[in-house]
Image (spheres, rainbow, N blue to C red):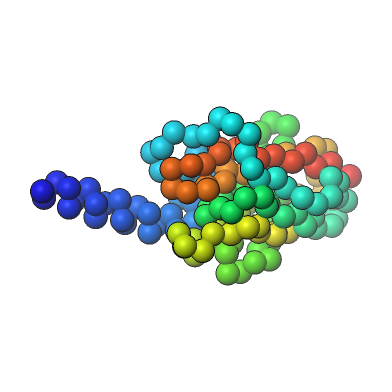
Length: 159
């Protein structure tokens, strides 16, 4: 009985911690630390917005689709390096996370099981002088045990 209470308490603390955003341990491979099997079917989510941006301008995108509880978004260059900086648009539901550099990732904030999100809009600023392709990659958590790791993508040309 004591073991069950201890396990339940541990799980409650873990779930609460992730409601405040992805853990830094998820930065490298975008994998949530939920311990469940990831989904292999096509995700019901996508990015909407322009497919190109000038290097001296910000890009505004929206992650949307079915309802979801959590997310982690990064922009990666051709060498799979995290690039650029995110600017929070929705201060109630998103925040930046410093993975490889300042504000280079975006994650959820205040995730509540009974109040899922239907979308989140954000701004991204390319690195100074950068030109080339960038792939936006998102891990989206539908429930604690149903999530897609890095399968929601969008290619952007930075001119």
